[in-house]
Length: 428
Image (tube, rainbow, N blue to C red; front, side, top):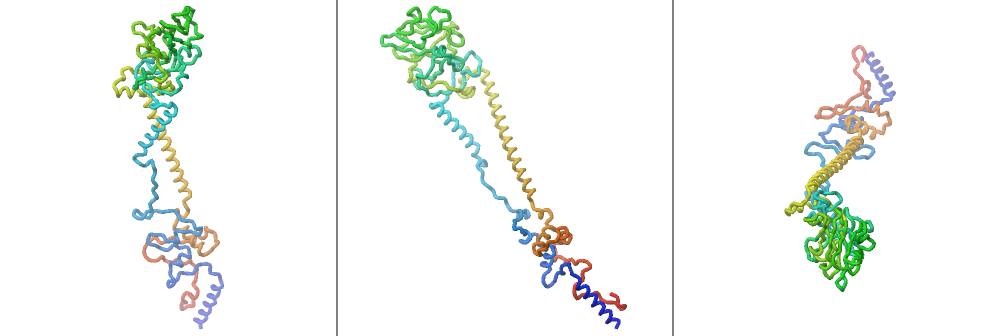
């Protein structure tokens, strides 16, 4: 009877226990599979090192970030071909820049070639290199213009028009119309040849003449002030940066009209105060058809490299070599500076992108054992419990990689239909 009463008492207690709500999840069943029960309680099932599809996905439908799966199984990032990775990228860029420069220069000058190298010192103002003036070794742009638009020295003296440190235009022409290297000199005066063998120089009209103080020219007729139907000798006074006198023998100029030209540095070696014009000693009057163009812009010093390669660099001023060296060093420094700025900018952009990827990394990657199992348990069970409480109930995966995970039973929980044995004294 004692045993029966104790058994009845135990049954009553079991019924009281059954009436209490059992909040703990049921223990895993060995026959139904421990993995499913463990997953329903937030326990991550053991795997052979590869995550399952359930672990990689989440309830929001977002794809997990790509993870490396070891040395042999890591996923490769897509490789895109870039033009600058080619071995021919830099040469092609340099060639494209040169072509663009040449096309632009041709469009500006309407001449080919658009530039010419100054090979002598006939246009220098002295023996030193002066910026803004034409020196030996400079590259001069020859712009094709209407010859009637060329302004001679004597006309510029009256109007104030100047180029390259002196009055008037600098022209490039082929002597006597022969093809070859053109001559670059300043146009001094346009002379008209009359049918009767006389000459007219209307460009001298309006300038002081004769024996007057500060006279600019003298002619052989009309008290030295005649500008039409003259012959003999025409004298130009105070010409150029050295204020020299230029004597022109009109009777030897020929029967064709044209420009009287002279270099800024052309002087008589025996008489430094006497200028030496190109006509008639070098050529006859420069006709309009011989003119290549007028000097409109230049690139200093760089033409000296061509003269050095040809062995004709003996007239290049020493200052030109110094300026050329400094220019090359400056260009190299600018190129390295641009490369450094662009590369550092790309590097900062890459670091910023990496930081954004790290900031956007999901929380599951930091603690995949607990939080991912928690999210799976919540998505399957539909529980709205506090995440902190659910995280406490989540069980980390087993450290050992062998066998099935051992189910964990909460303390104090009693399975239905199982009661502890009763001792001889009636106590459990």
